[in-house]
Amino acid sequence: MRKRKSSTQKLLLKLVQELKELKETIEGFEEPVLLSDVVEHEFDKPVCIVFLSDLHVGSVHSDYERLEGIVKELFSQEGVYVVINGDLIDNFDVPVPKLALEGASSQILSPAKQRAIAKKLLMFLKDKLLAFVIGNHEEFSSLDFLSTVKVPMGLNRLVVELKIGKKTYNIAIVHKSRFNSIINPTHAGIRQLHLLYPYADVIALGHTHAPTVATVFYPKDMREGLTPRIILNSGSLKNLDAYTYKHFNPYPVSNLSVPAVVFTQERAVPFARVEDALLFYKAISHVS
Image (cartoon, rainbow, N blue to C red; front, side, top):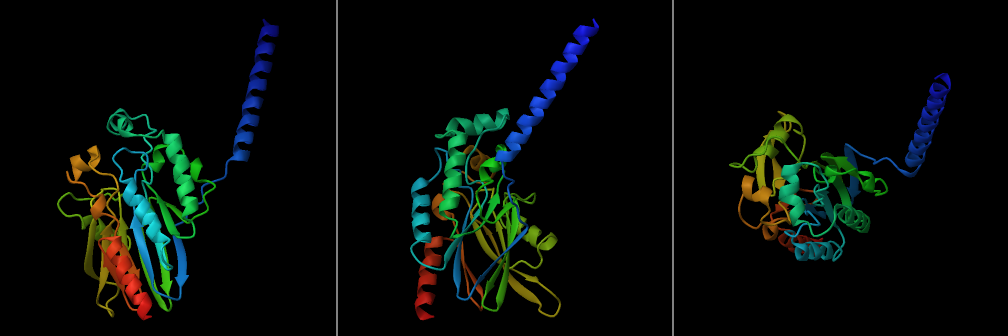
């Protein structure tokens, strides 16, 4: 009996040691995902920043032609940059029956393939990408695929401090907010402004697939008085999916999505569609 017990203990100790070695080996291969709260970018000339979110690459409902066009526009002229605010991929690699039923059946690529494409796209855009915010669809799986992507990255939210000459802008980027409203698409942005980012010049939201651009007035301090703030939601390149249809609107949104803001040393000028922003930016670039 004692010999059997001793033999069992040895096997158990050996197994524990092997598991420990396996864990150390895995940790040796993996790099941590580097997350930030604030990132800084500085330019001496005006820039145009494109706001993308909810691309849902891998879904049959996503507008890949529009995505291709936007990527080409980013490289068509200098001074044009992009922020990606979550849900770059559909990634229904999640054991939740409700989500699996609504999403997995509409995927045309496996979640693993989607993550590989996301990594390649982020690396391809790295010289144009000012920030990438991890959305809830990225969190459906392990974030290990992002560990070697060396771009400014935040989890659900991130602040970009943008300097244009002597002028400084603060851009608060939030993917998923608890204050979303079906009736008022600017409500979540205004609440974020009031409660968390009273200093922000731009509140950029995602998640709801409801494209929105608005200007509101809110004081930064008593001396300065009311100042214009931009509230935007970058919409989605995913059309007619179950989530959008159920909660926000039954219409295609990809052609109305992807806003942009032109930042100069005097002011920030928002545009509901990136195409209009690029025309304006090209015009002022020739003048300056």
